[in-house]
Image (cartoon, rainbow, N blue to C red):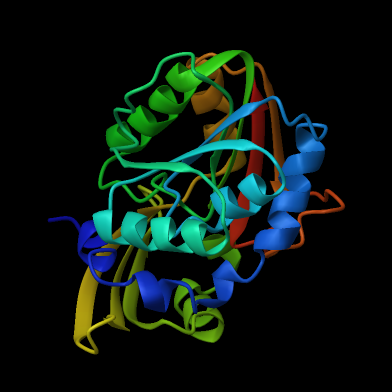
Length: 250
């Protein structure tokens, strides 16, 4: 079992208390503006987790489908949707092989919802290929990913330990040859048990993301800086941004 599968097997409640989940309203405001408030569009939320973006978009009148690898996260998403009185199709699926083709006008993949958590570059690339496959012609993909410029100028370990309320980065090693960060991340899961996860995450520089997206058919690509919940107004990516915000269309 990979570290991300182990993490999300028993972490749905703790996940919702993480600092990075607090910006949902502002992030959905941005998504709405990007699609010009067109409520006729079908939206796929890849790596939907406990459903925070799907639910907020559904509350605003959009047609949502959410997929995730973790059944526990999906169970929590269904409970959250029922509590908010919205109907969303949540289903278990692997982002590398999505069971759709030309079904959606927009795909979102926020807060590292699959990409770039995979253990090889090839598996990460499969997620972008799969996201392209689900979109109709003229469709759009909006996602966030880890900014490869950040660890060149900043400490990943210091950033995580300062900004995460859910876990502690015990050790990390950033490989300049592969742009992968290998770290030990300690969490307390929903059962109150302490777990030490050996994580392996890929950071990407903007030129790589542009090339990868163009290679699967995306034509218009915009890469921006982003702060949690503060994606408007748009701004340039800097070396201080832990994540980059990517908008691409066919």
